[in-house]
Image (cartoon, rainbow, N blue to C red; front, side, top):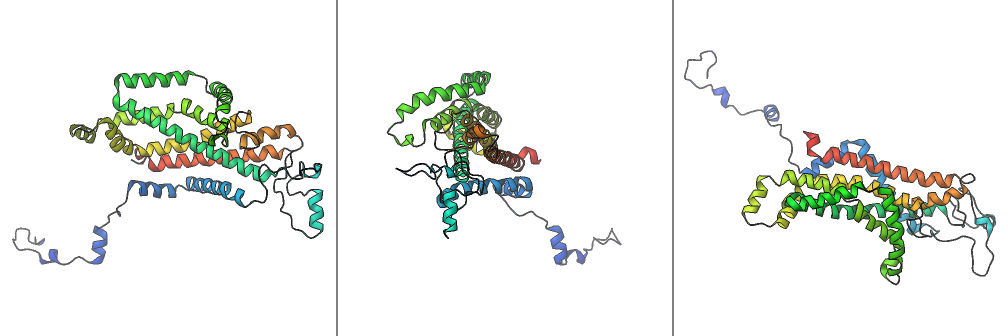
Length: 353
């Protein structure tokens, strides 16, 4: 339309001229296509605290796996102990970066001796490799215990949320009963009882290498620590089962198992990932607590809790033996908590509206 003469029926030819590159760039400001996972990873990368925490967790995990393969000392090796010979007491209770008299003589003779970064313990074992191996045990127990909690909690929570009625009432009443029990008292009692009952049945099996205490820890997590996960999944399923796609799946004859596995759980997977990430530090802390009380891993296999417990005997003379595993536990738990908070901020859609 001609602006100068609005009553004219003539077409303005300038409206049909090709757009310039600047005009195209101004009009087309579309965001590139992405997926939910990629978009969440992008937000997680922008969260510097969570990203640094993730790098710390990866570095600690890789170090706990690789270092025992290349370290010249083993976690159970008692230095200065040889068959048929008296124990060399100079290897006992070495300070960090200190050499025994035997090693110092070898160094004076021109030999190279690998240093003891954190010294040795009262049994003459290299303390650094024991801390590294204890970190590996604590991380492994925390990870696998969280997987067990995830499987049990997700299964019972999804069944309770989708089925409803009496099934939901029975499962939730079981959850209420477990919540009413004192956590630490039940954990200590179950750990003590299962250690005695499981230990004899594991002899001669593959699980004997893992130890009765570790197996009992997994059973304890499967029995007691699935309640929070089950409640969380149940709440998500209750809100999702009223969606149209669930009604459409039911109309086509799909069973409850198919709907839960194919539709409901994938739509709440972000909440599952976040809750699992936050469950790992709790599992590590529980394992360290039980090992500190002597209900954790079997000796001579170390964990961070058992190392801290052993350090109490010489806390006045060798306080660093308590400080080192305490710092490692704090660093792991803090990094996992910060990383879990970052995952929640990145992958929870309700926080990004």
